[in-house]
Image (cartoon, rainbow, N blue to C red; front, side, top):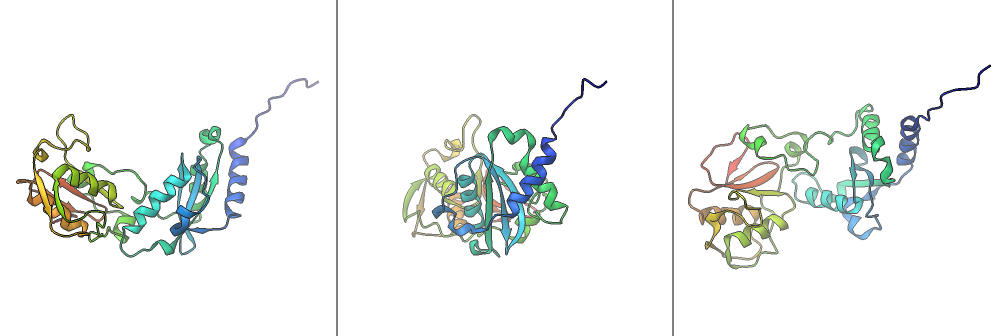
Length: 247
């Protein structure tokens, strides 16, 4: 007589099979058009395709915002264009986060030797100062698609600016990372005490980002502007970087 059994629903296994099936049923849309499409501002998972090949799987609390961030990042890179990249995405119930749908898709497609941008510096997070000071070499995405140091700063008109105002404008407007040193207890919006009372003359509108940052460094004795394949920095230092170029 059997009056008792244990039942356990294998949710991860069912989710794995169904998630991949539904994801592969999606059409791809151009990343260049994401701002004009009805992409939901909800949590979900997404894939990026380079010339139709899946190169990245990610998750986001707001899919549209994250895709716009990727659009901005790619637009500021050499050797790649927005027309080369497309996307597909799935909104998911927030309660599913424990089952890590992003991990399911990444494991599945990495087994098929896809998702080459995953784990190759493409993600949205700042790698931090440690990558620079340890002279860590640029990884896959940054090595293949370095930043456009000549990005035209069309939003910066000719004129004279306080150093901090110009730096904040540059940081917010660029499609890639700009990091600069701040005084203890100050945020990037408050800057460094060396910035206080210092102004910079910008001789023309729409200067390249590298030129604007060089003007800033010239206005700050003892400061150095450096360009890396992934980002720009402005620090109070005189330093040689294996993978960075002093501007």
